[in-house]
Every structure is written in C-alpha cells, then in structure tokens.
Image (cartoon, rainbow, N blue to C red; front, side, top):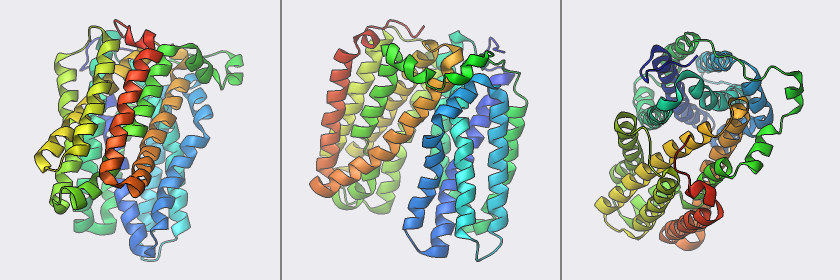
Length: 400
C-alpha cells in the first residue's frame, strides 16, 4: 500500500531497514575477510569470500526475479533479514573458537549470498509499492544516499570495532540486524502482482521485456558499460602510492570523495529535485560528466584536483542512478519489476566486479594513468554511442 507523503511511516521503516541491512553487509565484508586472513594467512581465501557471496546471485537470478514477482515482497524482505540474522549469529558463535572451520564460515557466507540474491531485487521492486509515483524520484535519491553512507561508514566502523572488540564485533552486528528485522516486519502489506499459475513458466519474462523495451534496456546496459569500462576505484591505491605520492592518508581522502559527492547530490535531489525536464538528455549529460571526471582524474598529478575529479565522479554517478532508477521503475510493469530488478542486480554485480578486474589488468599492462585514461575514453564513447543507439531514451521528456 502506497502512502502520499515521502516521509510516511512505511517509507521511513523501509529506509531504516535498507540502511541497516547495507551497513551490516559492509561491516561484515571487512570483518570476515580480516578474521579469515588472520587465521589462514592465505590471500586466496579472500577471493573465496567474494566468490561464495556472488555465486548465488549469479546462479539464482531467474528464480529470485520470479519469486519477487509472485510472492509478497514484504515477506521476502523479512526472510532476507532473518537470513542475515542467522548468518551473523552463526559467524559470531564460530568466532568464539580460535580455530574456527574455514569451510563452515564460507558456508555461512554462501547462505548470506542466497539471502542477498533475493533481497536485492526485492528492495528495488518494493519501493514503488511503498511510495507514490510522484515521490518515487525523491525516494530513490534517499535510498541511494543511505546505501552510499552505509558503504562509506561501514569499513570505517569495522576498523574501529575490530580494534576495540575484535571477534566480538559480530555480536554488535546482531543488535543492528534486529533493527532491520523490526523495520521490515512493520511495513504495510504489499499485495502480490502475479496470481496466475502460468507465471511459473515465465522465468524469462524479464529478459523478453528488456529486449522489447529499449528505454529500460538502455538505462540498465549503459550503466553496466559505463562502470565496467570507466571505473577507477580499484586504481586508487596505486594512484595514492605511485602517481600522487600521498600515502595512506591521501588514499583515505581519495576513497572518500566519490561517496561524498554521491551523498551530497543524493541529499540535494531528495530535498529539492523530484523531476527533471528532458530527463533523457539529462541522463546523457550525467554520463558525459562522469567520463570527463575520469579523464581529469587520469591526467591529474596533484591531490586537490584528483579529489575534486572524484567528487564529480560520485556526484555524476548519483545523478545517473536516480534518473535511471526512476526511468526503469516507471517504465516497468509491477508484475515484472522483480525479474527486471534481478537482471539489474546481475548488471550491477558484473559492472563492479569486472570493472575492478578491467582496471587492474589494464594497469598491469599500461600503468595506472594509461588504465584510467583509456577508461575515460571508453566511458565517453559509450555515452556518445548510447545517445545514438538508444535515441528513444535520449529523447525521453519525463520518467513517467
């Protein structure tokens, strides 16, 4: 049931649950990797942590999308919060022993990945069921801002808690997970969009919809390509050490700037800007600014300019996220939002993981400056080519 006010009780509960779920995820990724490496001293185990989390998302996306479209999204959110609670308490209990079993821990991580495989499309698809269409852009800006804050605060909080309480960190996360569970439990009922039995046969409905809808396909695929080819986050340690020569303190500043830009723009959009005139054109301007920020960063050899470029990088990406989110949600029928959101989750996962791999591998061949510069050129080509290839998206006047 949707309520008229953006700050309705339902949306506030959803926002709190979304933020605390992401915060726990961010802290867990740091803490588990730290404790696993401390126990085994094997860097490959860190790769296994990522592999065991991402594999369920990739393997189950057809099923998760269908489930989100045929089962109450509120129940899925509650189930995801319960899985997170179970995983956190299981890891906390394992960490009571100095010689915990690595494979038991990875099994917990795999279960956590299953929960995230369902939660990601459910969180995307449930938002239009909670807020009205007129408030959807602001709601997307607020939820994206909360997600960015969680990603920024999480690793910092994890470092402090690891230094303070070490393996007892998971008991603190357990308390936060109760907030997530409480928030989702007290959401209003969300009715099921698909009640027909033949829906069980339509696992590929989201894929067919994307192929037939160039506006939604363009919104998702251009983000995939822009981030896959243009992301520079993986290069920041190399830039801090070998290009800018600013050490770990400079790295911290560089790493914080994209999130700072994203958060400030997200707050601005949620407070002052609910609709965009000529939204398609604005989206491609954001893509172009993003590409330009990568090029400036690649050629900079002074800290303040590099930091400013990364601030613009994060701000432009947030503009893109909010616009694309509104376009996709408004142009996707509610009966298909789960399956389309599941595909979007795959696109996001691939762009982030493969983008880091692309940046690192090209940096090994061309150096960090060459990797960042070619990334900016490729992002600019994608923006220009996308404006031509997806003309309907570029000409779009409004998200609705």
